[in-house]
Length: 374
Image 1 (cartoon, helix red, strand yellow):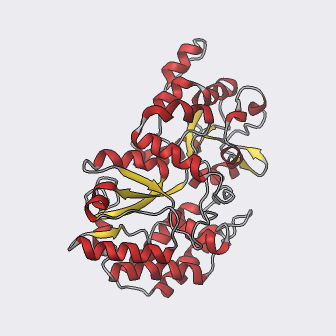
Image 2 (image 1 turned 30 degrees about the vertical axis):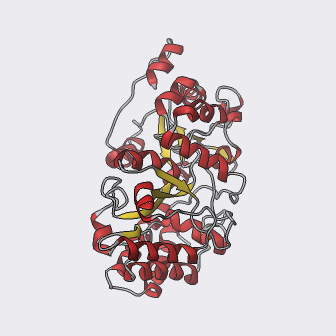
Image 3 (image 1 turned 45 degrees about the vertical axis):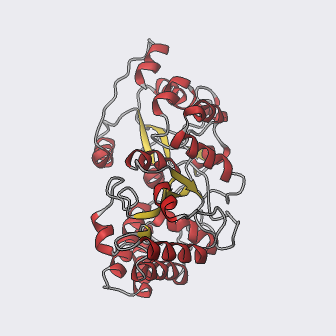
């Protein structure tokens, strides 16, 4: 990516640093605190508000009126970069929650996954699939601890999980219903037992990748991560189930990650030029592909749409659901990362028989409110 930028801007010297993803956030936090962070860096929505609120990010509002052409961004993606009315990041991808299905397992079972179905339909489908598939085969992976996929379920009940000030809007009944649903699917052998899920956690060890579960879910671009792991079938993309069949208002399309500029950069104009290159230059689009998500501009999607396979499936999905999706939520609040962890721990406590769904919901809500300071 930097080679293309440097070739077009020979007067600007650049250098990049690679780091394992597991170490990225610790490294960025340490360097930012020490004032030695990079000029331009990737920022997750999970930590975006936290970094912005403590003054670690440059306000790009003026840059977007000059150097950075943000008019090319999808509206929801562009607005996702606003914190307190200031443009603190430039969305680098359009993401949407999606359901993935193992084409080989479905073909063997003579099954298909509908676009329009309720959560009750989903429970019946995965239960019937598992019964017909035989031992150690499941209709779905266990999504009970996945806070981000739970968001689709919750939005159908309470709207956004957080208000504009970051206050949690969830109630006990919604969280308990989710945990109870997944507890029932595990007990009915439609989803893996907790020890199997606990042993996974990567794309390679996901039960769908191993041909043990027909369905899983995640951010839409992850279809390009699953497909190379599944040789005996195409991985298809479809919407998660709905509260009311055909109502996709629980879904959303927004920026997951951002290109951000350090508040302490000594080269703000060059940094802004690099950000513009990363979102608007065709050479950068070719190199990034869908690694970070579906590109946030129509021209970039047009450029990649002829790639075929999983890449085209992800792009087609985003363009199909965008007109029907609900309003995108705002930036995730400070403390969101702790909410993610707490939600997974509470689901595990149910899966291992250490808590009832009601107790787990109460524990999660208590820990989440403490993390959010609400």
